[in-house]
Image (cartoon, rainbow, N blue to C red):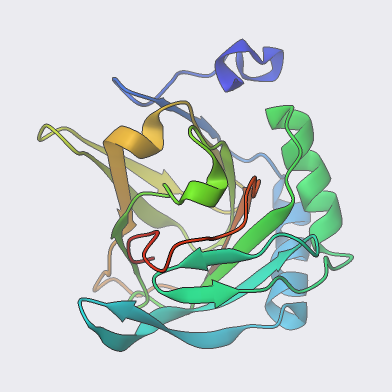
Length: 213
């Protein structure tokens, strides 16, 4: 677990209850983060997707790409995803995340938020194939955006500004008790890339595993 990781010993758990949430600001220094932002923008297979939401198909308000090991199939929002092979840009990022989290990752969901109108709906990463208490490492490159967490059984919220080169780690029981979103904003925003490294532990076996992304 992250709380027992010596690399995170000096970082505060930002979740006041029911889970683990660690922010490592500037995990990558500016020059390195700039390099990865440019490479990921140019080299990942970005595509527009549609999800099944409340009985109808709607476009996802951002661009997406799914990469991973050959057996890391993933199903969310009514859509099956077969991973593209790891790229030379993603491999070192995966290794760095694994070193911090002390856990192997076999997949990554990449999201490209092109401007302030692109967003992510409120959800929990609680799909069955992620296991009972998933550990997710989330890297941010580009524009600073707000990530908001809401506790499922109280009015408690936690708001985190994720900036260029930051690493956010979600673990423990967090996905059982908290939902998170990246809301739209009227502020002028440049592009932001988010990579969420995950470990698929089982294959999808249900048509309705998850909430909207």
